[in-house]
View 1 (cartoon, rainbow, N blue to C red):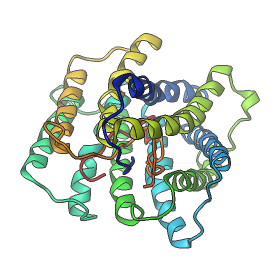
View 2: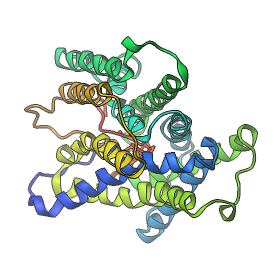
View 3: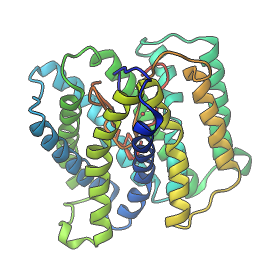
Length: 352
């Protein structure tokens, strides 16, 4: 996510290639997660992924001669965001993709803004609930029910996998307004904040992983495709995507850059279908469109003029003042995320 604002004055050809590249990178995160969990426990995959992302941002930090924050208070808040914005959601997407298609995980990632808004209004009190936002939330909720296909009954591994992916999006929903409440006013660069976030998430995962999944295998014990997937999730989805997103915001403005959220699930679906030969039931893409419509209404996309923050699935929940996981203030990451986080509602995320 990012709070940087830039005028929408650069020509389309200057920022569109980077805009599409970012959507593709974050949309492909769900594919790499699917490949990674075939040989790695979800917690081990997240540890490797976040570690690679942290190393990438440390290199960028050194090249730009930026510094990490020193205040204990900032580190304490970033530890919370690291858990809810990186470690837990990235892991949940991994567990979820053991049971559902990568393209479906990408669709669930798009529900993040619908979770952010009510939490920002009711818990963190950083936003107000308007009629427009209420309508958007209502549409989004209907879309979630359609994606789940509730009329077909509830239960089974596939349903559990969807709930896990929704849980990952819910974690972003906590991390985003939390960072806005406690970190957004920081004078530190988004790059330094995101780097700390990934470092702390790596430490958290390093402590938990041996108890949950055992010691992670050495890279030499993994297949080439899994190693490439881990590097793509960490170095590409967090490192390079971070730089691209910063450039998009500078050239096109935060408002335009934030619309990448609507392309991420499209790329996730296309990549899953082409590379993994996955297929969706008719109601899942229909539900996704309803969810995105709800997000657009809640964020005031139709006719809006004010810039909005960006949330990336593949980047941390707190991004650099320039972001994917997000800027000074997100994903990645996530999942992809980001995350694999999506754009957030006025409250403000991917792979995941």
